[in-house]
Image 1: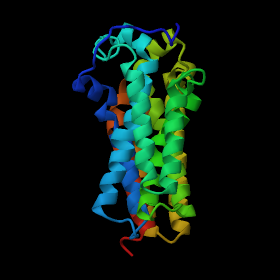
Image 2 (image 1 turned 135 degrees about the vertical axis):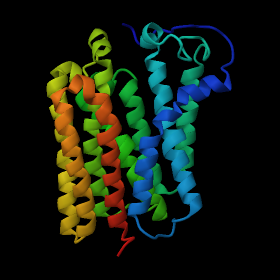
Image 3 (image 1 turned 90 degrees about the horizontal axis):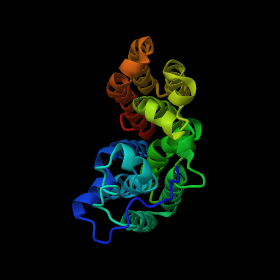
Image 4 (image 1 turned 45 degrees about the vertical axis):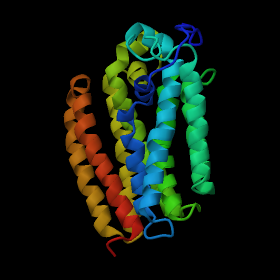
Length: 302
């Protein structure tokens, strides 16, 4: 199917409600949480203030994540016309090229906002926005392959958002090596979360030629891959925290990993049925581990 063909050419003006729907606020939590982890992991710093917290949350959630959602809706408009015709673009509530211009303006706004928060915040934001467009827009469309698409989302939603939080606290400077390493590891783990999220759309992915991991490998093998992606980085986080003499926080991350292992055992018994359950339970444990590691890195309890 031609992904560039317009769905409608109606002339008009989109309502504020349609534009808000394109931003998909329900998707903002993961990058905002990762930003908060980064903000905490930097410890007391020159940028530790309510303003820096608010500015970063706005950047990583409504601006960067919101931009990625608009871009994705624009380039998926033909698919949505078949599967979700009530969406703003196929329904005509965001007529013509309104969504495309909205995506461009929102992307520029996010980058300008980031420039005001420091050079490394701007750099992380630039990479995140670049990945957002590469994920959805032809000719790259990383989303067509689960290995690449999930990597892009994991890096953007977890790693770059974490780096952004730490950089803001540090006055826009580059965070330390330990912060960068932990952010990268949790980004890799997020690849597994994205794989489980793809379970809900396997049939549609197969029809549309989207090679998500469940579509490529089958649900059973994809569930094993997802668990390994989530588990191995967290074990490395535990090892690094022990190496840095943060044993209390290593134990905290270890506790949530043990709980995840129990949840993974249940998930693997019936991945098709239990993937949504794991997304609600195991992923909650995963993000608790993120904050435990962040508190340890920030030296808040030492």
